[in-house]
Image (tube, rainbow, N blue to C red; front, side, top):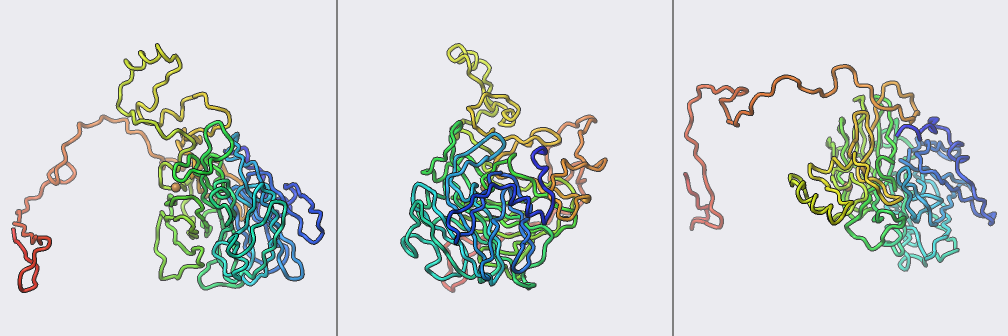
Length: 478
Ligand SMILES: [Cu+2]
């Protein structure tokens, strides 16, 4: 996990993000150039070079699209096209996306900005873009057939509107959606407040990513688009653990994470070691009176959740979807539960017929993480990720929040594993193990019985449906 992350040079290094990308010059001079990014790494925040200032976001394993200021209008150029996305090191998927990546680049603007978006279609079929959550003229809403003609292959269409309210939004096609979203077409959109906002606190680090899911058979490259429930790759910004970068923060940073869900099911997103508040949705900032502390928030299909917290506990804190099947990578679903089954006799008989037969999951699935099983080419292992103490036994929607005292402001470089202070790691008990004591509500070693007089307990039982003539519920006293 450590070797790939030497690129972070901190905030303000916007030139790095742009020059690292291959820039393709568009023939038409009137169009802003379409910037292409081919690397799946988390790019540094793109500091605004013109327009109203704002505190830029960090897109997890993604990047922000540079824009051109044209007579007061922010102009962006999105190119819908087939892309090769590295979903984790060594595992590549043939997806559709924008400007070289799936998801597409994050778009960042400021409340009140007039925005012009050129969308070029390099897909083999028509498309459109819906700007999820925006207030805009109806004809800019992007539903092909309803609000506009679809963008035909080879054509470019222009959307223009004012980003009227601050918040966390998304963009995605509204044409052959099932195919195009199953193929990875989506992106994040942030509208920053134009001034101090009573419901939007300033933060030190601001992360954004989308939840997405794919069904890619082991050994193949292209998602099955007809899948409705049985996805086998649960990803954040089209990356699966251990391919998802850690979220690196400095101790006592105020941190914001914006999460959008464009899968077909809900994801309870869980943070270890800290409590957070849900400070915004794709409907905008939440009212202060509606906020309460949580460590898990469910992000339903088509929703965005923005969470804020103070990162005041040092360490490497797990951050993941709480559905345990969503922290696993590609596998067959038809695996019977074999826990507790003794295969020894049976396996001998089967190996007579099938010499390569292997017993799986006799003691649970954890064995599989250490098993060097031959896999078809281009298959992500089911649950992997090495930690400082062994296999993390996770895949899919899992990452690590790294909170460090020494982390410099604006530095997102992976600091490595947390050096635990002495005496703060769970340790092995090496003394004798006592025989288990049968549970008693009192009187055991930990709760010695007090000489308490037992009182008679009276309970009133209400029988369903039974009502007495006087309208009082019929009751029995035992
Ligand atoms: Cu999930």
